[in-house]
Image 1 (tube, rainbow, N blue to C red):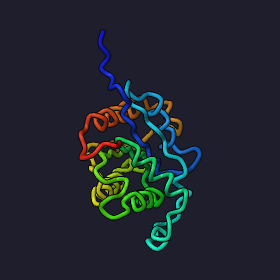
Image 2 (image 1 turned 90 degrees about the horizontal axis):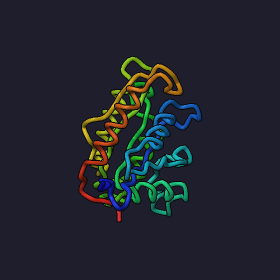
Image 3 (image 1 turned 30 degrees about the horizontal axis):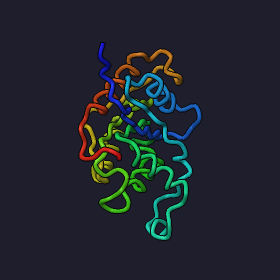
Image 4 (image 1 turned 135 degrees about the horizontal axis):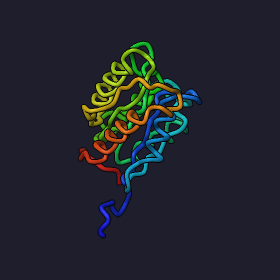
Length: 187
């Protein structure tokens, strides 16, 4: 039997929009990492809450080490997956900040040309749809290639124990992201 997995794995950087330890979106990212299709490696990028708010003067003087680590993780990935809740009808500030840092230097940032998908869950009425729309719009402006299809869902439990369909749907989005041919692939 011939394996259909690529010789080198497709690397997906997962950016979790909630920094809370018990976050349902963190749990979703962990499940996606653990259940990723054969030939796909999902790396949860740590330390997003350690990034200072984007400041061009700070960047010009030399980006802090935390910023460089996140930029390098995004640049090394073949694809990017945002796993995020919705805060007050918008994406969390931590995720907006990652997009700002990842879009620089202008026209050559770590997000440039990267296929990006957005999934996540929020206990609010709409399951995060506004935040996810905003994230896709923002990453497109920042140079990424945002997939239109994503997943905005309302979970039934914080650990997703009763949400197998939500996890299955998120895996389908991950599979579509991996199949997407973007402008560039990490070297």
